[in-house]
Length: 292
Image 1 (cartoon, one colour):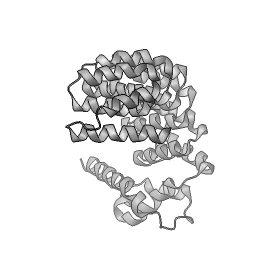
Image 2 (cartoon, one colour):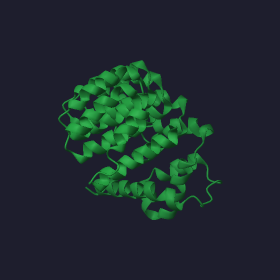
Image 3 (cartoon, helix red, strand yellow):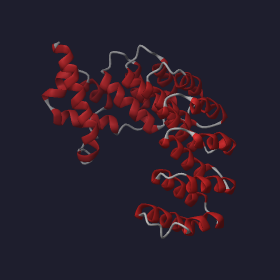
Image 4 (cartoon, helix red, strand yellow):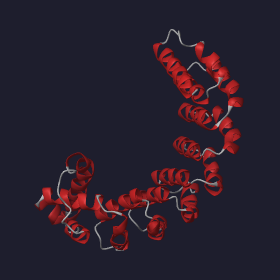
């Protein structure tokens, strides 16, 4: 029990540090602290409680690690005796550094079901930042299996969206038929990042989704990926749907698509009785004029 309480307390302290360090530690002088020393200091839980100011400094050393430090970070990450919280910090930093050499160990941890789930969230997300094509099979397998942890599937989808390409697109498309609305929503969000015009038809099919958040995301994606051919479709939704939420998505999409046809439609809503509709119509018109 005592060990569990200590673990929870140290997790809370490090979570607090992750939030606060970017705000208050930029001016701290950590240049003379070696990365290995910082990692070793953070390993015993007792140190986290004994001197929180010192803990902030050591966390900041990891956050300031550069591409030259990647071998040290990888060694600590793949060492299972390294504290979980420290491994999580390292996974985040490797993602920020887009450290290609870290790909194999990040893949290994992500696919290992015996690893801590919070760590797997971070390693999967880091693989997206690395844009490592070799990670696609593992991320796809996790994403497609509805028995997997929901958030891990979502993170894998986002990573696939960052990696991009035909293989990632193909893996993501199955998510459009998932029974979980949030998986469908995140699938569209990820496909939107890939910007493959060949998936427009699939996105059009999602306009009939029963969940309004998914429908709105599909409209938004069509605005980013589509061309003028989708404007009549969006216009029809704008006229037939009675939800302001969907109306705003349509107006935003029209602003992204641009062109004279989109302008004419938007002009019909600049004096709408609803202030929120009026505001979004004018904002989208301004965007079109700015992009000309």
